[in-house]
Length: 138
Image 1 (cartoon, one colour):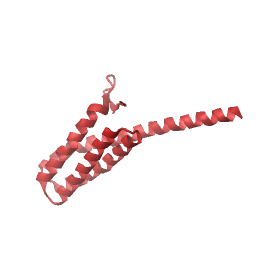
Image 2 (cartoon, one colour):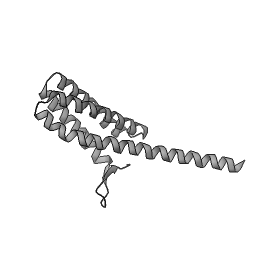
Image 3 (tube, helix red, strand yellow):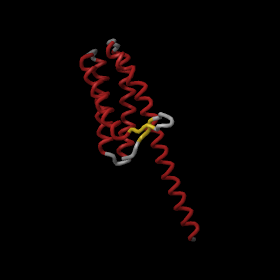
Image 4 (tube, one colour):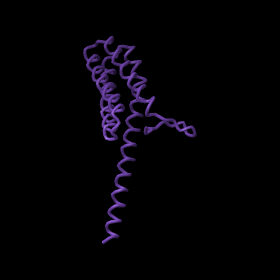
């Protein structure tokens, strides 16, 4: 009976560890897509490419939703706040692009960046050996 209890405990710990690793991988994937989308988005805003801006901002909105969920699951309120504000700004960016209001799009783009910067200052770390970025638990 005791061996079964120990086995169940070990299985639970492995399950929890795998869940944490899976969440981390999800955040890394979301951040990579955000980075790949956010930089070129500025050129689309400047070029007044409303359709391109709306499409890219919708991608950002979805990925910030994932990031917000990650931080909420980790009970990291400030990370969830920054991701939520970036998600809302991405939604504003979609709305502005669809209305062809590039001044509002520029403002929303800046708000996304401001929230990225705040979160990265706290939660982003770079591995000196590989130069790869990842989540840093506080």
